[in-house]
Image 1 (cartoon, helix red, strand yellow):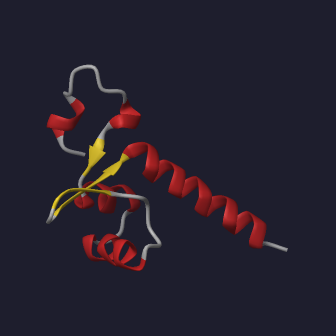
Image 2 (image 1 turned 90 degrees about the vertical axis):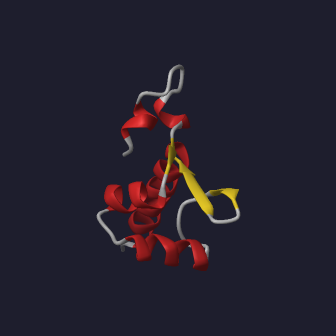
Length: 77
């Protein structure tokens, strides 16, 4: 995670905006995988800050991950 994001005054951890690289490092996948999730609309919700600038809210990444875990648990017999 970028150090400038962690130094933001008054921001809670859930409000931090992550880059695609940050999300890739968190999930231990490639940046291309994160991009593919975005293209297929299967990954965490994201925000287009500008035409070619995408950010992910920490809270959305955590929610997506929790939802994936629940789906796996429900799929088990």
